[in-house]
Image (cartoon, rainbow, N blue to C red; front, side):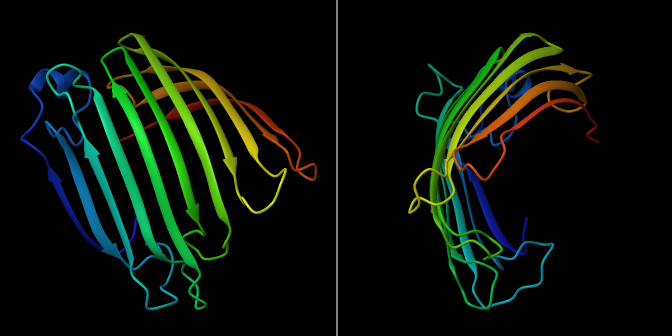
Length: 207
């Protein structure tokens, strides 16, 4: 979230009511959607420390709305400077292939970029992530996630790998109010960092 101006549009009207009710009603463009904006770059939580404005945009294409309506291809990009008076480069290139259905959601993402929003990281980095959620019943789902991330591609042996598996009980609408139990582990190639392993029980309340 940030201070700025955003333009959002759907392509080709909207998906039918059945899709919006049973699969997803967010950005339901029949052939996709787009969003583009210009922002201060520091986020709503931080004062702006330079005059740079970050340009951010997303383009999503739904190539087969009648045959495979849940299939979408997306690109998200940011170009600007980190929120620091030295104006460090901050750019993001993120591609995602996603499939949504009443009973399953699957995504695959690839990221390549440099720096970060706050400007305290000027490294080149890349990574990828795979996520799947299976929803055999209306109020119950199981999910898994695998990701690999390199926080500095100019340095060897510093990647980290993360695995998450879990289950969710949805108290009302899917992904609103729910109870989540998951096992989350992160393995670091950097020997100075200890691997992180945890089991979490979470109650999510969304108004």
